Image 1 (cartoon, rainbow, N blue to C red):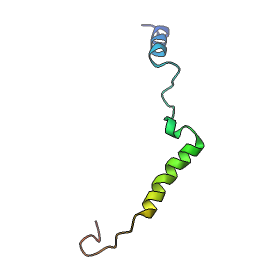
Image 2 (image 1 turned 30 degrees about the vertical axis):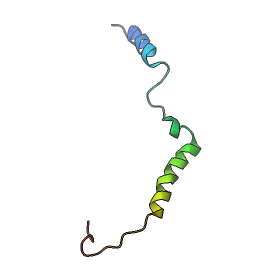
Image 3 (image 1 turned 180 degrees about the vertical axis):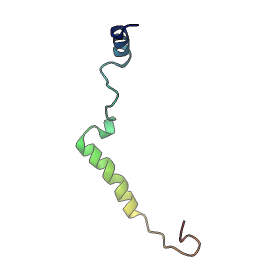
Image 4 (image 1 turned 180 degrees about the horizontal axis):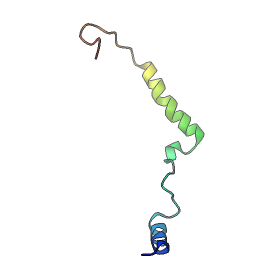
Length: 58
């Protein structure tokens, strides 16, 4: 098979996608920042567990 034939076959299958595009939820700067901040906020809201002799080094 020639490269041109394979290229056309891939274009029919995948369209103009390159394969390294970001998912929709990370497509803009604002959405990326929101995705980063959300887990941080959730982790700050959880109460911190105090170490005791049973879980001190786990």
